[in-house]
Each structure stands twice: as structure tokens, then as C-alpha cells.
Image (tube, rainbow, N blue to C red; front, side, top):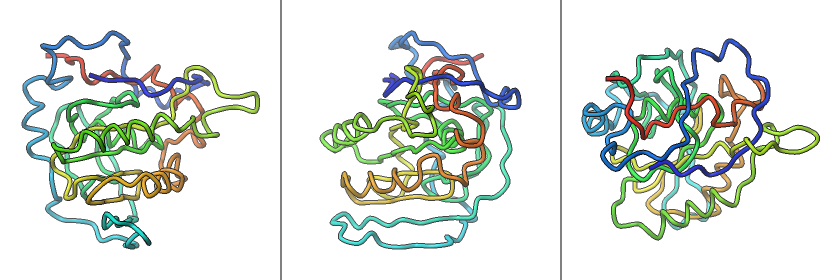
Length: 243
């Protein structure tokens, strides 16, 4: 079930973003809808997620100084992207994903209790978001710690105006399980990844501070307006999509 993490102002959203949007729904999903937007395709999409067949070489690869969890940060040169039909197979270039072809609708920023297909959350990265992912199943305390970190963070200044943040603005952060990542914990932005054997608050916070609403994200709030930070035009991908 999606748990919204924050709200903030919907500013004017340029018309060219229309192709990126889907109609949101604030009602919680029914328990029977646990496979989410892609229905019976969801398990296969999750099971197929993993390492790329032709991995991209990082521009930089650096162990995080002082990390007790073997954290490594990498940056990449993003390539071309295409919006795909939702629930189609996707090709990734890094693991965890840091860019690539993705679904034409973008998911609401927030916390997900079960894995959502990568084709959705890569679209969040295009809009300047940070996605925290984990493959561990014995880490409920760490999951709670990430949720606390997310709750601590206000919307990025780019999502607000000189008079403050609108009630509709989110902090552009999401959390979802992803059993296909190569480490217990990871974080992704457009063009950068962090992998770690465990969760360290300051390490993940520093990644967030460095890469949220990154200038390399094609449709971030700085580029297209603060409205992209809101969930108003996003899709609740925990609910079933068209048959």
C-alpha cells in the first residue's frame, strides 16, 4: 500500500509533461489488489529485475569514507530514454537503475510496502526523485529507519516558492523493495547510485542532499516547475491499471 510521505504545492505544469502523467487516486488499494497496476504481470516484472546484460561503465566509483556498510557511490552518463507502455519489459543499464526507458506514467512519491516494477520508479528519477530500495527481508528496523529519514526531509527548495512550500509539495522521495538489486540497500537518482550492505542514516542523507532534483534529471522541478513535486498528476501504481 502506498503511504504518502509529504504534500506540497502544485505549480503550473507545462503542457509537454502531459505524456508523463497519469490520473492519481487517493483511495487506498484493496487487499485483493496486491499485484498493483500491472496485475498478473507484476510478479514476472519483479522476478526479471536484476543486473543489465550490457552494463554501463561508471564515470566515477568511490567507496564512501567512514562507511561501516561498504557503501559505494557511482555516477553515470545517462543515455537516451523512451516512454514505454506501462507494464512492458524494460531494459536497465545499471543496477540499481539510474536511468533508462521507463513507463509513460509516473508513480506517486511515497513508501511502498511491496515491490513495484522498475519501469515505474525510474520515471520518478527523471523528475528529480530519489528512490531508496532494499532486497533484505530481515531488516524491518532498517526499513523503519529509512522511513524516519524520509519523514525528516522537507521538500527541496526547488519545489517551493519565495513565500514557502505549498501543501501539495512532496519531498520527491520514495521507498520500495527491489529483490533484484545487488546489495541489501541502495539509493538511485538520475545518473547516480549508492549501494550498501546496511542502512546508514548519514550516508544515505548525504546521497539525498547531493542528488535530489539533480541538474542532470531531464524533468526536475528546476527545469519544469514545482508542480512536478506534487502527486496530483502521478498514478497510484498500487491500484490495478487497465486490463
